[in-house]
Image 1 (cartoon, rainbow, N blue to C red):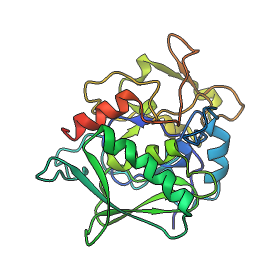
Image 2: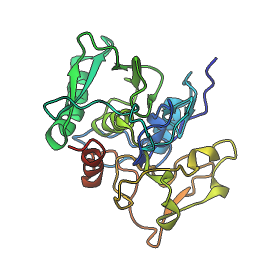
Image 3: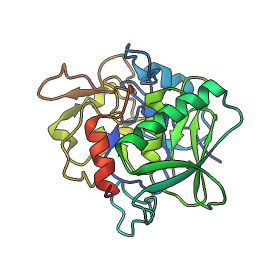
Length: 271
């Protein structure tokens, strides 16, 4: 039986997936998962409250708000490379996928738009599944979440129609599926952010644990689409994550992949 751990906000962690965590809505933004913004909407919203509401009824066992358990390997630490999608002889990394009929044509356009950035900026190509055994099944379940990295077989990426079908949120979950964790959990995060443990429920603090990550020799990225928002999982409205040394630095955007997000994908997959 899967147990819900609550909504969490996800921040991109540059590391391929740990065993089979799903990263989802809760990990989308400043607050627990509230960075669900329409790509066309210039107004940045706090994902914390929105994502918490969305994930409240999730039946999946989630960690960091939108990463599916069990977790048996660390992000980006994948010696066998089995947790990454394979590169074709033409140099492109093909990621087969299907999209549930539950999505409207408008929803499908949003998802296609999110994928288009990967196509134009990296060697990743999301392609409609034909007969491939390993593929992403994009569904409207009870939240926004994804496993981290290639899991093998059918791999659900959930984008609930009730709050998850936005450009940046779709990118966030797809990036989890490529093998990336939340930014605030990377191994060197204490040099760049302060975690305010007193503002986080004891039952939710595991979402802020550091991971043993391969950071791909890239700098910490406050602007990553994988970063939690400042009030993610807050129990009192106060910040749970404070950028240092400048606390005014914005974090938790869900508008688009950042330049460093794109760079990491290209490094990880040797594009």
